[in-house]
Image (cartoon, rainbow, N blue to C red; front, side, top):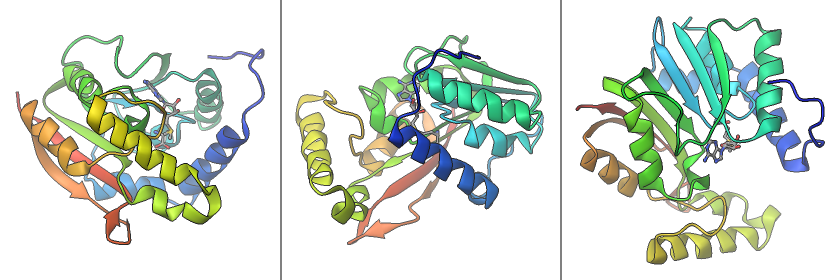
Length: 225
Ligand SMILES: C[S@@+](CC[C@H](N)C(=O)[O-])C[C@H]1O[C@@H](n2cnc3c(N)ncnc32)[C@H](O)[C@@H]1O
């Protein structure tokens, strides 16, 4: 995945990578895996929207049979490849692809994860269906995303952006179309969608709330058929 002609990282990308690797070093990323009860030992694992490879590094401790990371962003993929190589992560493949058109056959993976990516895809249902397609029956899907309390956390720092996030999220609810990245979600709707698609929702973690509203949700679901 090496490409020396990439533009410099944006401020956002650099800050994201720094924070992601800090969470990795302090064990937060691994703790999230354990909290969801993900056990990747000897499994085929796909991480969609792998970003700088933080989750891939953490899950590699389980020694999966196959570890595949997918992202659309060349810069994140390059950073991820460098970090995973530096750590000599085995049985790894990084692929540039979209989470809504995955280049893998039906029922290929035992575990599919997709953390903090759904807020950025054009439609939640389409993305969930594609994640489910590549998962084996009885396979595990683990996802996370931002719910209505998320912007409140950043209200002071980002000024009007949180309010815009509410506006775009409202537009998505009314029109079914996402207008910008970072559209907020409602974890109950995501769960309902999963159940409709034949998943059993096994765990829901709602670790933080702002003013009583969920900031980030994490869901583990089993593909029942
Ligand atoms: C907020 S980052 C999350 C990175 C990592 N999963 C984590 O939890 O730290 C969102 C990632 O999703 C990627 N992404 C956004 N839309 C995508 C899509 N349609 N298909 C694949 N990756 C996508 C972005 O490039 C970015 O790396």
